[in-house]
Image (cartoon, rainbow, N blue to C red; front, side, top):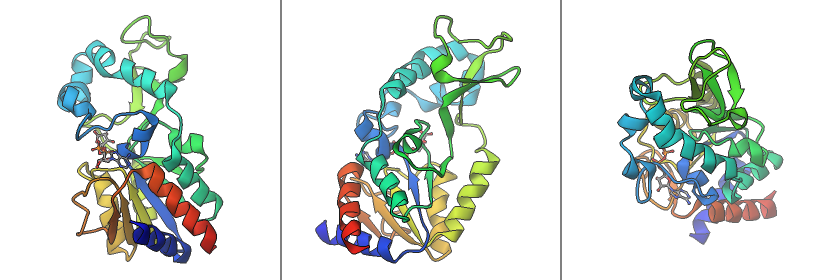
Length: 248
Ligand code: APR
């Protein structure tokens, strides 16, 4: 492990343009459960029942009651962990250009990263399905479920449900960053959901080095990623940043 931490710090020190792709694992140490694997949300719920746009359109109250209300409580309490802080520190050191995140929790921005692409949208805002008004989630009162806009329209998270397209701007910018970078950190994603899982492939095909950080191996491991540092994101990022600071 120590060798790989040193190697990652050396690779970061040598890199010219570094980006990151993060998934739910990056927020696990902020008490937000992942989606898959042990203790994952999809162990408790069928994602096609509670996180697909068709199920939301069929019964918005059910999806609000089963998933969105709990998610609001979790995200209201969540604070950046050492993984988020480590990526913000890399930016401060001039070694992190852009963070592409599949997470809708806003924790990268809270930690201080300034260029964060929210690939699956955000939970920080709700939008009206009739007039498209955007309302900050913390201003939405949960007395009536589903909550409604002042126009009477139903509010929905400004996040991407299964069955919906990735926002064009996010897709385009992520692909461009993957092409332009020469090192991509892939942190805390099972790399099974497309098109996010394609970004490391695009980066690899453009000559970039791919470093994975995850306690488990993924479909990228040994195929697309140059190496996997098997460990929790917080402690691993702390160790890498500490090494890097000695080198630059
Ligand atoms: N540090 C780093 N990685 C971790 C940690 C940790 N402390 N704990 C768990 N992991 C890893 C798991 O091993 C797993 O590979 O994080 C990954 C989480 O995978 P998923 O739950 O599948 O999350 P993600 O890849 O972000 O899911 C992609 O699927 O459900 C949809 O829209 C949702 O954005 C989400 C997308």
